[in-house]
Image (cartoon, rainbow, N blue to C red; front, side):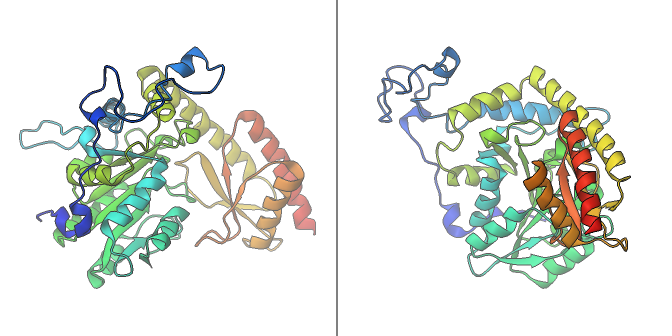
Length: 405
């Protein structure tokens, strides 16, 4: 297969040149090039730490240092002996590491979801393949960009993708340009088996398919070490991987997402993005989060969450009216069934439990019963031990009353 990005990306996007300014070439001295307020922020009482953020200055549009730190972390994970996914190698056997040219940073993963659709899918003419149940923003971005959606559901027994059916759909419809897969899944909490993803990649390469397979790994740091397939973007040019700082890093408030891809696509996505989409506060927090000490703390916190997940799951499954753990155990949440008196998953009761927990007990979970294969399901984030204790107490009480009604 000869990969050609020119056959995938819309022609007008291929002509884009990145926005440039004088600051790209000159970062020091008397900076009078960008019409910033040189007197500084007008906020009174900024702390010394806040003043160091240079909030009156535009942020670095390239974020090379941050990208280097992100790559260093993912490369090191892939090189661990217990890693599920290893770094690809060149003809001499040397590892091909991720580098800043593979990365585009955005305002959460949602910016990358939208950008890739805008870059590759001709509005009103081409399509995006989704595998429900899945993350809702894919559908929203498709609608906004006038991209028709084709669905190949997950195997509803185990919430894994179905490679044969995906490939069959690709073969039968040449207008499909993108495939979005969530691993671990949302709302399923199930890590997609790497061999299934590799099966899809292998087949689309044999077909010389002009499109991208996008794997959204928002929750991957709650999965076994080295589960991320992001290192493989340098081996499989049709592969795109997205991650976020919102979950395991505990930084949902800074809104930072990462998109890994072949350098040719990454260059185009960086040309498309708004020049200063990663602000100074976000950049500062992310730089601190990707230093050795913070990464160690992230892993410790993830381990605590995983342990709490096991405790919550064991206890909640013993409560009368709770059915199966419908999802997997690869994320910071669980997906459980709520049953009626006949032992059947029941949306009405599940929604009642969801509603009364929130309004009467101030415990907010998520009703997911309308998602494919999730009838009667609630998605519950794993909290602190104190939060989980209250959840279990209030949950059992509310559910018992719901079953009596």
